[in-house]
Image (cartoon, rainbow, N blue to C red; front, side, top):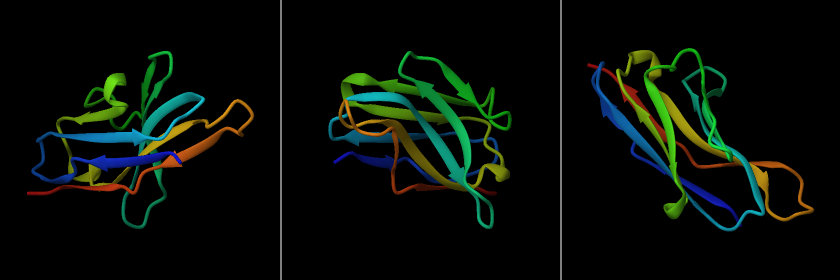
Length: 121
């Protein structure tokens, strides 16, 4: 069973920084990409950043230049460094992994439980 556990959320003032971590456990046959999504109160979940298995990164326009996604393969962990945080970044942040558990498994999305990020003075 694949499990994703996020950590690192909290309360930060505007302009501050946080680093989110997503530790994965369980084996995957293949991973297409790992990424981060967020959901603010009353809004739909939105994509934030992605890191492909080949190492390519991509970001939503709203966070490009402020957020950085990275990984530590030895720790099977993905990070989201968030700088210059704004009140509109307030949301629950979810870690995502898209991949196959076995060679014949369907391509699925796996999700963590989420971590709250609040940007407020």
